[in-house]
Amino acid sequence: VGLSLVSLLMAAEETPARFPFPLDAIGRRLESLFDPLPPELRIPPSSPPAPPLPPPRPPGLPPPSPPTPPQPPPAPPTPPPSPPPPPPRPPPPPRPPPPPLPSPPPSPLPPSPRNPPPRYRTPCEKCDQCQGLLADPRFIFRRMWGSQAWRQWKIGTGLAGSCFEWQRDSPGTWQSAQAYFMDTLLGKHCQTNWYEGNGGDLGRQDHFPTFEGPAPALLGFDEAIDHYCHAAGGHGGHARACISASLNILSLYGTRLPYNICRNFEWQVCAAKGLVPGQGGKGIIFSKAPKDLEFEGSPRLGQCSGYSQVDCVGEDGYATDSIFFLEVCLFSAICSNRQDLFRLRSGDEWECDLDEGAYWDLIEKLRTPPVGAWQR
Image (cartoon, rainbow, N blue to C red; front, side):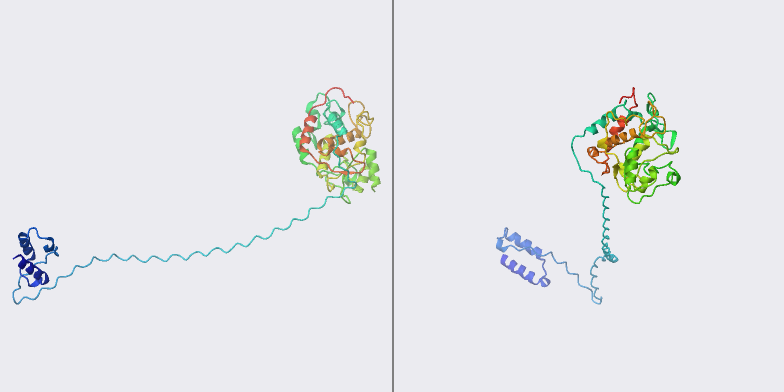
């Protein structure tokens, strides 16, 4: 029986439409007969049972419409196409190379000194002498900075008795001493007519002399300056002889801008910086060699020797010979090449290597008013 049922089951799987018995019933029957079936006789799981056949239709009815197959879900709307990306920005054109910098003009060669001095680096006795005399508040050098033209700095007047605290072109108007020292170092007043007060156009405030060539600054005793300028081809009086020989001197004689040692020191610093009008460089010449000056026991220092606009007898004024001694010592104080200064010969052209530190060291000495009786 079992074999017959198996044969029926196999036939039903091959032709299910013609077999009137449900397959699952036959399978359950087989399981009851062969429990458990050997593995080789078990029926593999079948596909899901076929749906039951519809009942027979009455005659005369039209065949039913085939079932509508399920419609697939509507496709999602197609998004509008994205706009095309903008075309890539073209790269900027290459920047043209900068134009080549113009070559700097060649530096003008400094004027050749008329007699270039030799360079020495030996101990300087006269430098030390000058330092001591400038530092001494009892020596004539300190008294020569008075506020009035050609007058000494009075004892007991403090800085107000000096020319440091009074404006250069308004002697009755106060200024700070520090303003004077700073203006002098910066060369604020270098573009001055340093011949103001002379006769004719030369002495006008707004006039500047005309030189035929570079005009180095010239210093010395008055008679040595006159001799040097005439020997260099100059003609005329003191100032005009030097101008015609292309030499610059300090020659203030006016009342609007009166002479005093403050104006003298301004002119010296301007000469050291090469800023005296017409100087054409930094050249400085001494008509009397500084090495030939005698600071001890000289009858020309601290005496009424030379020119003065006031009576310089006693302790009231000073004269031009003392001014030249002071000028040499001031250059010795503010120039780092001071040793060369005392190796010069008359007529040698020299340049001051201005030392700002040494300048302010000097100022600290000059700010101390004179004291006591003058000692030579």
